[in-house]
Length: 284
Image (cartoon, rainbow, N blue to C red; front, side, top):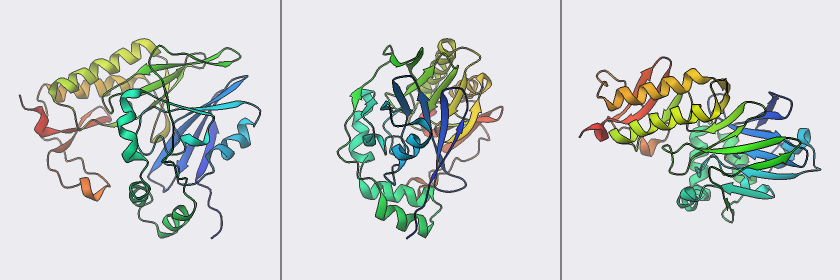
C-alpha cells in the first residue's frame, strides 16, 4: 500500500507551529511544536497510528536539538506517539489512564470512529501503527519550567476536570498556550457532578488569570486559535448547568458506539461554546 501522510502544519509565530494529525475531514488532533535554541518541545503526540510524527516534525524543526514531548493528559489520542521523543512528560495523576490508552485493539477501535470507518485508513494504520505499550513518562506538575533556550520557556498550568491531572502548556514569550481538551468550543466533562462543574468554572477563570486575557489558545481537536471569550463562555456554561438552568438542553451524542445512547448526556451552550455533561449527576 502506498504511503499515507496524516500530518499537516502551520507556523503561527516565530518559534511555534501547529501540527494537525488528520484521520478524516472531521476528526483531527492538534500537536504543538515550540522550538527553542537547544530544545524542541512537542505538546501532545496524537493517536500514533504511524511511526512518522518525529520525522515529520524534524522536516521543519530540524534534527539538531533534543526533542521532548509534553502531554496535556493521558488520553489515548494525546500520548500515542510520545515514545518517539527523547523524553515524555505526563502529570502523575493521569498515569492510571495509560494501561488502557496504549492497548492496540482499543486504539484501532477508536481510529475506526475517528476515520469515519474508512477501510483504507484502517488497513494502512493496522500495518504501520506505532506499538507504544512500553511508553515511559516523567512527572510534570504546575510550577515546573521547561527552558528551551533563547528565552523560550514553557509553563505547565493545572487545568483538571477533563482528567485528574490535565495540564495546559503556556509559552508566555509568544502568548500562546496549548490547552489539550480542557478548553475548546466544546468540552467533554461528563464525569463531573454539580460541584465539579462549579470547580471547573473556577479552574477556567484561574487559567485566564495566569495566562492573561490576550493569550491565544490551541485546543486538542481544533487547529483554530481560541481567545479569552471561549474560556469565559465555558465558565458561564458550567455555572448555569450547576445552577440547574438545563431545561431544553439537547442530547450530546458520541461517535463511539459503546458509549452512545445515554439520554442523560446533554449539551449546555453559552454563546457559541458548550459543555457536554451528565444530567443525572446534577441532582443533589
